[in-house]
Amino acid sequence: TKIDELIAEQQRLIELLKEKRQAVISHVVAKGLNPDVPMKDSGIEWLGEVPEHWDVMALKRIAFLKSGDTITSNDIEETGEYPVYGGNGLRGYTSNYTHDGEYPLIGRQGALCGNINYAKGRFWASEHAVVVSLIKPMIIKWLGETLRAMNLNQYSVSAAQPGLSVEIVSNLQLPVPPLTEQQSIATVLNREITKIEKLIAEAKRAIELLKERRAALISAAVTGKIDVRGTML
Image (tube, rainbow, N blue to C red; front, side, top):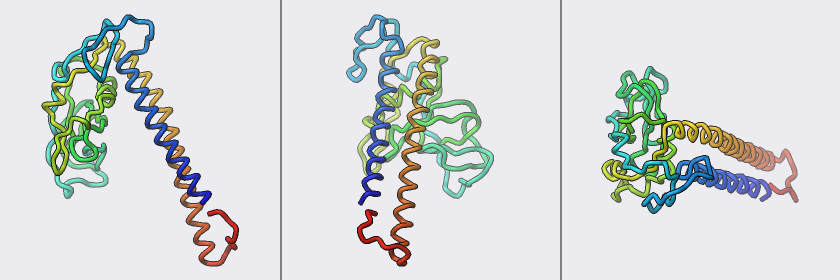
């Protein structure tokens, strides 16, 4: 039907926008913002060449990774003092906290393996999230987006419930620009990702409106309020 076709178009648009978002992140964290700088071979297959003045080092040299703490669903409320973060971001609230500061979080299990989120302030990190604690001064947003570009779910350990190996991820090599460039990269990515996510949100809203329209037309047709002969639902 016509409405179904329009919904499918919006869904395709969302997928294209998600691909564009990933491509923008991958390019900027691997190549930087200046296309004219001299490059060098990183020695990392997924990365290729990086700016000559960047370092390439194992994640464990700049951050410590550790899974969060177990929390039962009974201890998670819709409102409360401290947010609880799992593999897909905010899960709810609780009366205690495990961390205080700003951290990237990596989804640890199942379909959310390798998912990247951010937490700030006092919060509880559940066992489904890996907390990335910096041991060297780094820009949080830069590090999180670099981890996103690394497609970490490919390093999940196969099991009935796939899980991310903290040891494997800690040993992965990544490109590390100087701190000032990290900040510039984070600023640009924040701006570009915000634009793309706004378009994704608009497409999702369009889908909801189309579904509401379809449901209203079907309801009106069933109750005989409109004559739908020849109408494309």
